[in-house]
Length: 175
Image (cartoon, rainbow, N blue to C red; front, side, top):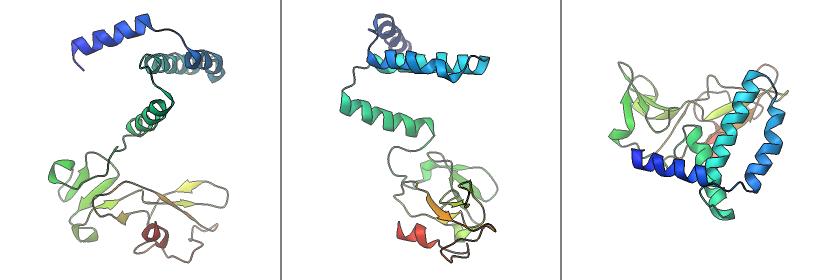
């Protein structure tokens, strides 16, 4: 963001009319707590809401912006990965990591060099807690939109659908 764009943003913030969204934030943010962390978080979130309010969103554009911002803040891509060479960073002797989605790798020693998603499958225990592990990594094909499937497991971590965590997860292949 260049200086002129930053200055224009500052000007919009200075002239911003506090609206319903900022009033809602002001009602809700004190619930984050009165400790240093809660106060700092509330201050930062209020500033983000203020900037959002300066953009003049309608109902549709606000929803679109919220969805896109949520993905960006989680370092997720907005459009499918292509697998093109400029999407990869060489991070190890035989390993490459996708620079648009850090959970996608390719490695000449795994999956015959095919790209794979390390968080493709998340295992969910009976108490609702989740984990990844052997079997979480699944091969992807491009164009690829990162996704995760949840597989319920028993108390020992064995998938309830009979899958043995080797090869392709049935829920992954079906999605």
